[in-house]
Length: 93
Image (cartoon, rainbow, N blue to C red):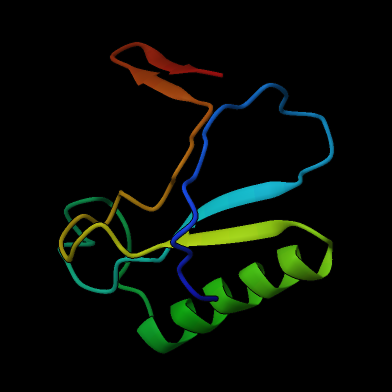
């Protein structure tokens, strides 16, 4: 996938309507995965899986935009939108 110079207008009006556009974040390939509670990834496999996911969405008619990884070391920064909020008492879905 290529990066678009087109401005991204955000706003989720529904989480159940057909998906027309998706903003994805490229995976971070370096960082302290163990400290985040994750096992170190097979980076080649991770990149292939991300590319295939983008291709799958595009094949389903979804307009896909891919942001570059937010930076090495930010291993938990893989979600452009996460509908779950974590609190000290647990998750709010």
